[in-house]
Image (cartoon, rainbow over the protein chains, first blue to last red):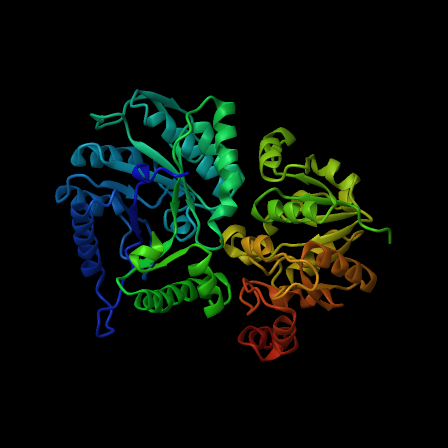
Length: 296
Length: 227
């Protein structure tokens, strides 16, 4: 059985540009300030983690999550500050280290980095990378990152990254180093890679029954065992909407989640979400929608 | 053709793993290969599909009555056509720009992905299926023959005998089928179509297929062809 006291509860946002009650869209600036207020409230309510995604699209307001997290850090005390995710493949591992080490300092040790390959791909052309190098970019940059967070001078020869000779990076962190997760969409190879580096796993489960991932947890444990690495509790990221009233929660979520999936589906070529699909997801799937009782 | 007993899967990603699980549950001998060494996928297979045998591409193909391509479309040319010579092949792939990159670099825009896969593996018999339902739906929706609300997959290819054989195989894997004998019709279930990502029962799937030309995507394809 799960020990409920050990569970942590977090909220994640991509900084969606949402509409006000009269239907008009908020500006990006309003949306960003809203996230900081949400972070402040979540901290007061005892939520464990707030995660902010990185996107480079008109429908999401946050492309620089650490700046938003820095603002949240300054008005909160307990809550952990995570990215969800940082697209390492199209980022510079040195800058990733520097930004998170800064956030770690600002927040007194509350920074969490979630590294991912990204499920959106617009950051690749934006930063001058080729999508066909998707795997190689991530592998190389993850290796470089893993050396950087040891916070000792590194010597590095890169193909996609800069070469460094006995180079140190700053600022140093005061605490136990930067807490690192890898965001995983369901590729077994990603599980093994995470276990190999001794990082933590966060599974993105955006559809279907969450228990189908149970064998993946076995895989994580076995792989960590083979590499002699620790096994950490595993985090899960899913869609959710909670309201006092069950029916209200379901209807608000249906309208908004469908709009979100269908909008993204348009560019990715998947079919619009049906009510049957949505109801399946809220009943036995991976949309956590309803009143607090139901969702808990 | 001989009865299918040994199923080989090229690709140990999300789709490959799910198809291996279904094939094993259906009683087939299953061999599967990944992009790296056998050792690299051994732990994954042992844990996620206990009972399936991890192997090299060569090891998978040589012992299989049927080979399923479950790799990103952009990588199919990494497999030599000679390797699949004389084989019955399921193309479970799609053109998917999110993982495959820009179309022109991967695929000639003047024909469909499965036609190009068939042209490349020109000594094999290619049938397209398992491509249009999400991988977790494949896993969750597989049901025995006659079960209520059983979902259907589109099966299409140019060789009638092969298509019928694959349709019978799909049925044992847990799905009804809607069958066409024209590989180019694979476009009806590609990304952008009403069917990509949808899980439908046989009558509903049949209905969309029958009225493909009236769907938004169908109209676009038709306009493209006559342009």
